Length: 125
Image (cartoon, rainbow, N blue to C red; front, side, top):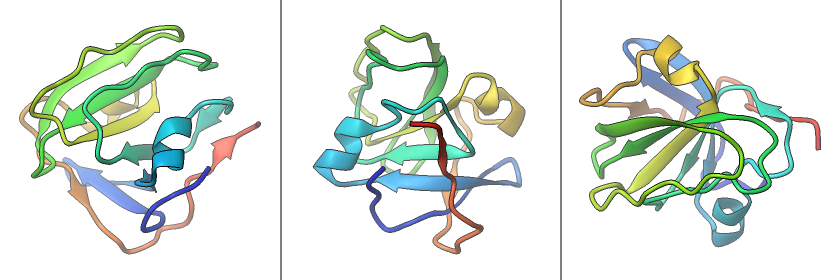
């Protein structure tokens, strides 16, 4: 999966989660398509909406504004089209249930750090 600046942790509620960044057109278009799961999260930027067509698993989607404040969190099953969030500038994707475990909910600010913790890798191809 192509990435932007590289892997690093994402934090919310004082947690650090491995993160991949999809900033190029190709990486944003691919997202989590064709993988069986993900360790950590994928940040898609810029992005206002996502779909889960051809996805193999249910995901949590957090819509973030330009300051990385969480606007909304949705769980999306495969084959769904998410509604665009006009104020969203980034989307954070993870396996279903992850956002709740991490404390990512509307109103929380997500902190992105460039310090690598190790690469979050997709499982399977």
